[in-house]
Image 1 (cartoon, rainbow, N blue to C red):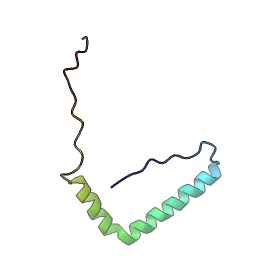
Image 2: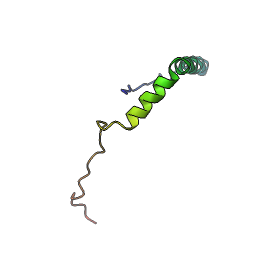
Image 3: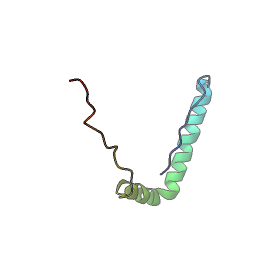
Image 4: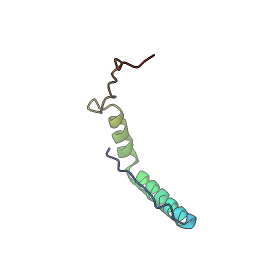
Length: 66
C-alpha cells in the first residue's frame, strides 16, 4: 500500500479539526463496512509479501573511535 505524507496547517481551528476527524472516522467506518473481508485479505497479503522492502543494511565497519 502506498502512503502519502499529510500535513495540516498549524492555524487549523480545533472545531474544524474535530469536524475533519469525525468525517474521516465515518468514512473509515463506511469503507470497512463495505470491504471488511477484502481489506483483511489485502492487509494479510501485504504482511507476507516477499517483495516487501527489506531492512537497510548497516555498515558496522565505520571506524568509530570507541
